[in-house]
Amino acid sequence: MKNKTLLIFDVYGTIISTGNGSINAVESILSLQDKSVNSDLFYAEWKKFHRENMNNANINTFLSEEKIFENDLKLLYEKYNIKKDYSDDVSIMLSSLIGRKCFEDTKSTIDELRKNYRVVLGSTTDTEPLMENLRLNELSVDAVYTSEIIEKYKPDIEFYKYILKSENCNAENAVFIGDSLIDDIFGPKQLEIKTVLIDRNNKYNLENQSIKPDFVIHNLTELLALNL
Image (cartoon, rainbow, N blue to C red):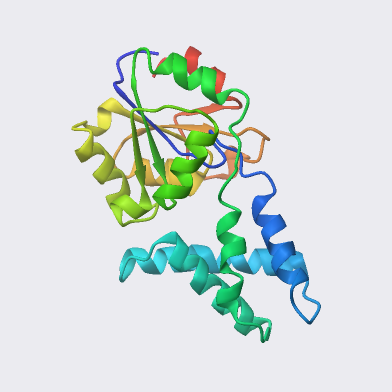
């Protein structure tokens, strides 16, 4: 790797695994209800509402992810006619954000990259849960940027502009690395930031995608060999 000074990493799904935390949270929530609800449908609706609420927060008044979780659950309980007070169960969703582990290739790769590059995180999340996960994994980076700090969620262009401005870095001197075509490839490319898609499980068929990353890798150690 050469010629680039700033590496911006997405976090969840890129350097830290989400595991089954969200699915387990849904199952825990539904186990408390007095009616049967399909957990797969509930989970799918949760992800849909969460994205919609984030998009609304970009357009209207910004809300923290904690507040968005509250709105998600309120909508879900209304949709599934659950009479229990949704506010009693928000903590289950929030607790799913803590205790997430790094992928095995994360720490060694980040440590190696930091010898020659400034390595920062750009994550669609609240700050404290992310910092707790960094502490848990003993992972050090040069700076952390979250949606709570920036008051925008990916893929809003202001999210990426904020990081570049804070780092005093031009777009051509930055690389964004992540696992989402929309959040980590499409968003940065609006500013002509070079992008790396990490596709650990061969999720994407890029021949059928209009959004094209500059590079595709399947594990983080492949970053060390790229000519960025």
